[in-house]
Amino acid sequence: MERVVLVTGASSGVGLALCRRLLEEDGRIHLCIACRNVQKSEATRDLILATHPAARVSTVEVDLGNLVSVLRVARELRCRFQRLDFVYLNAGIMPNPHVNFKALWHGLLTGKVLHMLTTAEGIMTQTDRLNGDGLQEVFATNLFGHFILVRQLECLLCGNEKPSRLIWTSSSNARESAFSLSDYQHAKGQESYSSSKYATDLTSVVLNRKFNKQGLYSSVVCPGLVMSNMTYRILPVFLWKLLMPIMWLIRFFAKTYTLTPYNGAEAHVWLFKQKPEHLDALVKYHSCTSGLGKSYVEPRKVNGAAAFCCRGLG
Ligand SMILES: NC(=O)C1=CN([C@@H]2O[C@H](COP(=O)(O)OP(=O)(O)OC[C@H]3O[C@@H](n4cnc5c(N)ncnc54)[C@H](OP(=O)(O)O)[C@@H]3O)[C@@H](O)[C@H]2O)C=CC1
Ligand SMILES: CC(C)=CCC[C@@H](C)[C@H]1CC[C@H]2C3=C(CC[C@]12C)[C@@]1(C)CCC(=O)C[C@@H]1CC3
Image (tube, rainbow, N blue to C red):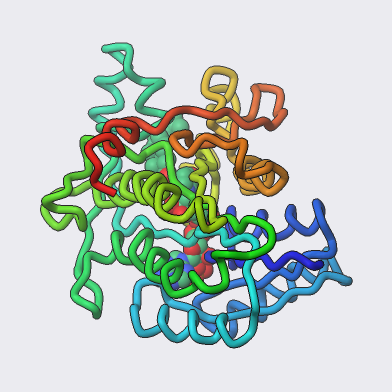
């Protein structure tokens, strides 16, 4: 039976690389790519078919930061498919990023620089805003739109012959201290990205508790630091080009410097091949690349997830 795989944020970066890698793993899947509009969907489909001409690729359009659009695409998917085997919840934004180089310099003097360079803790802020639905844009796009999509697709995901899978693209920037239940949309702070990714980690834990019995399993992955449209918006392109040799050097000390979207999709592809019953719901799967460029996956516990579970907030 052909497996149906839905990928959001398929038009570029990790999402596009993931689509290609999934087809390399199994050319018989039905890949459904979700992009923001018809032009992007068709351009992405053409790019994928250029390298995998025999692939079965269909398209849907969704703006994950718009609830009407999410409800519409869920309706369309329910009409088109009888089940979904994998849903990669990968689309994400980081608007108006700001890097505090002074803090990075301070980190160099205090020995925290490697931690800062791999998690961006203490050196990165964003300015968020309200979207058309009156929600914080980063929360709405990175988490809430995807969450509503999952809930709307329950009938395609639960109670199938084989387990279905949700795979969320989280981040090493996900941080417990950036997230607060009393301000879960992060309207008050300047770390909306970090907060949305931590909330994603917790959501996956809670979804497992609720849906494992019905044959739906959720995992979170971190692609590492990847050069993509998202990162190219953080610094001017010429600066990134200058930094590239330094980043290859850093990779000898920081295995999460995956740098290419292909390497960044390592954990996503690895999970595609695993039996979900053998995975740990409290673990985040990190794509890593060695100094010499060999990719592998490293599982790490999600900070605070066990405590969150024990408090029974699910
Ligand atoms: N790059 C990195 O270092 C890291 C990235 N990540 C995460 O990886 C994921 C992929 O990012 P990456 O590939 O790097 O960046 P890209 O900017 O290349 O990809 C982001 C994708 O999300 C889509 N997207 C953004 N907003 C929306 C929306 N409102 N509705 C639908 N689709 C949307 C984009 O579509 P469009 O082309 O239309 O903009 C694009 O396809 C994100 O979740 C990101 O947070 C995590 C850790 C590190
Ligand atoms: C010497 C050097 C590499 C300088 C670059 C400084 C910063 C621009 C980067 C250092 C850590 C990076 C980082 C990210 C963006 C770029 C940095 C802040 C992310 C926030 C990108 C998106 C993520 O999801 C996590 C990344 C963590 C590390």
